[in-house]
Amino acid sequence: MKRITGLFIGSIATLEPEGQPTGIFKHAVAGPVQLTRTGLAGDVQADRRVHGGPEKAVHHYAAENYLRLAADFPQIASALVPGSLGENISTTGWDEESICIGDIFRLGAALVQVSQPRSPCWKIDRKFSQTGLTRFIAEHGVAGWYYRVLEEAMVAPDDAFELQERPAPDVTLARLWRASIAHRPTTVELDHLLAAPGLAPNWIDKLAKRRDWLAEQLDPELP
Image 1: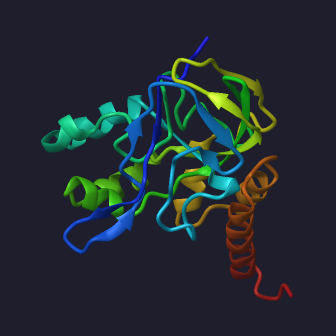
Image 2 (image 1 turned 90 degrees about the horizontal axis):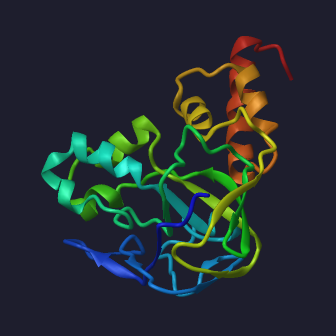
């Protein structure tokens, strides 16, 4: 049985030198914390236009990904530790190649569903004072993923983390991410991804617009 190896929350801090507000700085919690439809109690997001909300209630990052980042950015390896990319949950044994859109997990007593990949932002570079880190994370699709909360409950470090349902077993986060950054994904591939149960509405809208644009390029006579 896999377990949660870390839970992280944070308040608003600032990124120097401009002083931009951010919620990327998290600290580990030692005991139980309430998980609600909008995330872990005590966790705050600075820009709610792009972070937080019911479709991005919880951010999960694979602990193994830090080893990959450290190998390519040895100069900041000591800072690349669970919680440092602003995630709420850390585990081992699950990553973007093994998690699928729509997966439903029992998180302690709570129930959560994978809704979308995380899209890394420039604040990662700024936090670590490392140009190119955000780009590397995006290009390799190792940004983590988000959950919506289906059942609220208290959760704690070392709680069980168990897969309950997998409605789209071939739509991994890695596959979705590769299609999203591809120069010209096929419309067939995009249609398949769009059909994945549990995909977040903003991703459905984004992929549908891309599909429609590609279809128009192939056949400009389409209405």
